Length: 151
Image 1: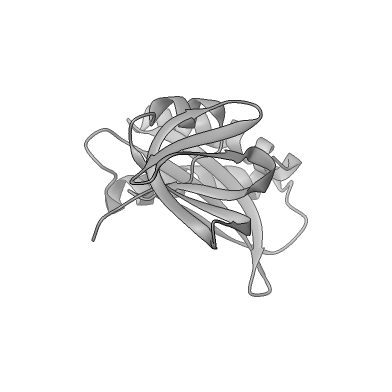
Image 2: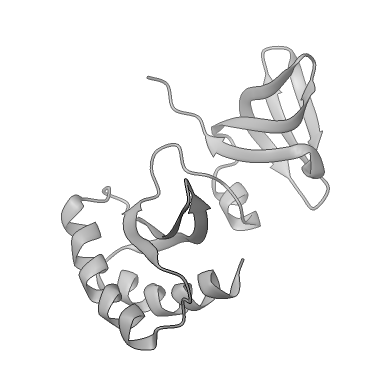
């Protein structure tokens, strides 16, 4: 996590929790030539637009006051989403037994994309159960893991 993301997380966490939500993630990324600071929130009963708006209005003036981000950026508060990205060990622990989509850097078994039920993840590898049986990937080969959503 970058220094900017870490500092923004320190600011955001108490505000998010005061508003009855939990902080899922904070990212500071460059997309299409612009910098984005995104705060992802979660809540058992689902995140509403009102939740995002209230939290954004509370965090924004603190970010302006502390002025620790050197670039011009777009600030967003949004739901972690049904297809949220799993990053931290606690994310994976929380969703053992759930279906996930794994995207790889290089194709395995002819594909970079794999879907299956998350069985385990440790410091070295991630294991999913597919219709073909258990499939294990080295963590270094995994670009991203998201919760799977059927549409």
